Length: 117
Length: 110
Image 1: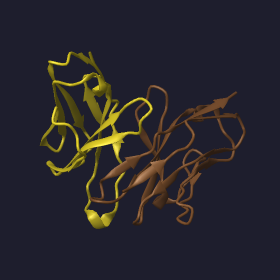
Image 2: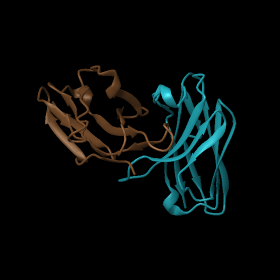
Image 3: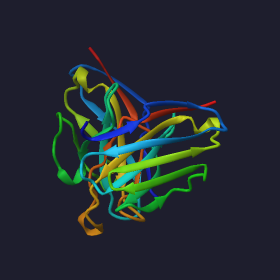
Image 4: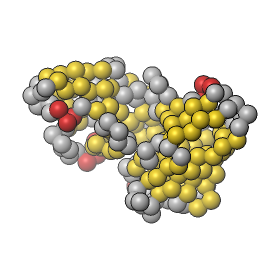
């Protein structure tokens, strides 16, 4: 499959569970992102990885733990989540061409719909 | 701090009518503004970006720094334009930092 893929597409978990979301990009990009999309709220940028290094962490609770083992894969490890963490989690990727080159378009995955009970 | 405001949650227009989706931003530097679109059951995707100064699917958007706006316009709405539209600002504290608006749902009535 081309583009950005995410698994699972749907996930239901209890507050004591540990689960992981997976994102894979097939575009040769070197930057990857996690976003949270909740009802009635704007898309919230959670984490940014560029060249496999975390460059942005927007005050996300520690119960969310990202991992970027290589430029094609991004994980979001979930532990002891709260019901308010229920949302659509989107992964995106882009080509990081350097600060002076401007911003490149982000390509989004289909998202993982998470429900925390 | 950077902020993007889309004041309308829902915009309903008749087919063939003009469309204007509003976006205002707050940012102290030189922003790069984007419009993303999400059609039903499809992923979020880029519609256009202001530096390209292009028209995509009949849509255009002009960056107005004086009014800090980046409204999305189309002269004649089509049914297939019905979707969620998100305005996004890239800038500040690392050039990959991006802020999205809350989105506007465009509903084109046949």
